[in-house]
Length: 153
Image (cartoon, rainbow, N blue to C red):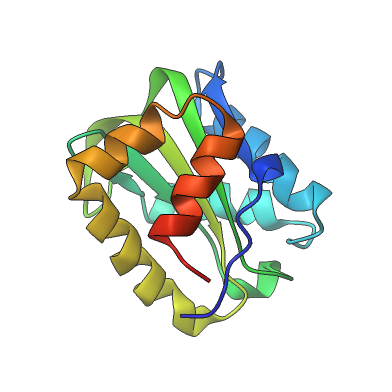
């Protein structure tokens, strides 16, 4: 897998948003600020979420939001922890909801990287200690250090 930008400006801890659209838009702001994505990125993430839900009922429920590579200039990972869980439809079982506590917003410039990154993230979700450390990170710098350890460049 190729490198991915992991940066404090892409981390939001204790997000107060209460709806998935608002939370995704908020996280995408950092991707726009760092010029990682094209106009239309967030709208396409939201549209994709309606057709292909991304909620995962892990030990700590998460959502892995993403869209097509054509909306991405530079691969990056934005991460948000939520003050209050937000309902996402479950991946593969959209009639069920997942109360996500952490949102991972992927921007992948190479479409061949999508499956490897989703597998890598799924592996992290099985590790209770690491997932709890992500959710409970005390500050953005600590979370970035942890993410760079888990996802080395």
